[in-house]
Amino acid sequence: MNTPPAVVRLVNISKRYEDEAAPISALKDITLEIGRGEFVALMGPSGCGKSTLLHILGGMDRPTSGEAWLQDLPLHTCDEESLTRVRRTQVGFVFQFFYLLPTFTVEENVGLPLLLAGRHHAGPKIADLLERVGLANRLKAMPHQLSGGEMQRVAIARAVIHDPPLLLADEPTGNLDSENGAHVLDLLRGISADIGTTIVMATHSDAAAECATRLIRMKDGRVI
Ligand SMILES: Nc1ncnc2c1ncn2[C@@H]1O[C@H](COP(=O)(O)OP(=O)(O)O)[C@@H](O)[C@H]1O
Ligand SMILES: [Mg+2]
Image (tube, rainbow, N blue to C red; front, side, top):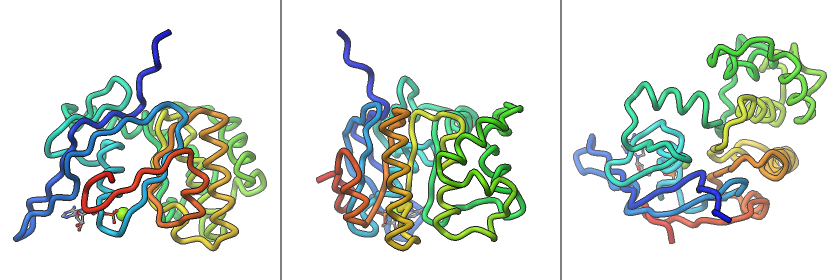
C-alpha cells in the first residue's frame, strides 16, 4: 500500500525579512512533513518564527528559499492569484483575536468563506457547524453580544465551513481564560479526530500542547 501524501511538506525553508536596517532571518532551513489528521502544537519563545511559519503554510507569505508544499500544490512557485485561491479553499485560519466581522451576524461570519467561493444555500451546513461548537441558538447574534470564548468558537466554525484540509491556529487560546481555552482546544481536537483536518497550532500554553498529537519546538527560526 502507498503511504498517503503529506498534507504539509517543507523542504529547506528559509525566510528573511530585508526591510529592516539589519535583515532578520525569521526561519532557517526548516524541513518537515505533517500528515493528514495530525494535530501539531508549535511551541517556542516569542519571535522564534511560529507565526511566520504559519503564514507560509497558509499562503499568506512566501519563503525566501526552499519548497513549501500543501498536498500537491507548490506554494513556493504559486502566483498571487493562485495563493489567494489556496487561502480561500485549502486553508482555515484561527487567530488570537478572533477577527469576526463586527457588522455581520454569527451566521453570516461563518458563511463568509462559502460566499467568497460562490457557494450559496449553505444554511443547513452553517447551522450544523454552529451546533457542533455549542452556538446553535446564537445564529442571529452580533459578535459584540458574544463572550471571547464564543467568538473564538464562531471563528473555528468559520475556519472549517469550507472543509479545508489544513487548519492553522495562531495562539487560539492566548486571549481566553482556562475554561474557555479548554473548550476551544476540545473543539480543535474533535475536528482533527472526527473530520481528519490537519491542524497546526502555535501556542505558549502547555495545556494546548497536551491536546495535540505532536509537538514541534522552535528556537531562533529553527526546529529543535
Ligand atoms: N513582516 C515582518 N517584517 C519584518 N520582520 C518580521 C516580520 N514578521 C516577523 N518578523 C520578525 O521575524 C521574527 C519571527 O517572528 P514571528 O514569526 O512573528 O515569531 P513568533 O510568532 O514565534 O513570535 C521576529 O524577529 C520578528 O520580529
Ligand atoms: Mg506569533
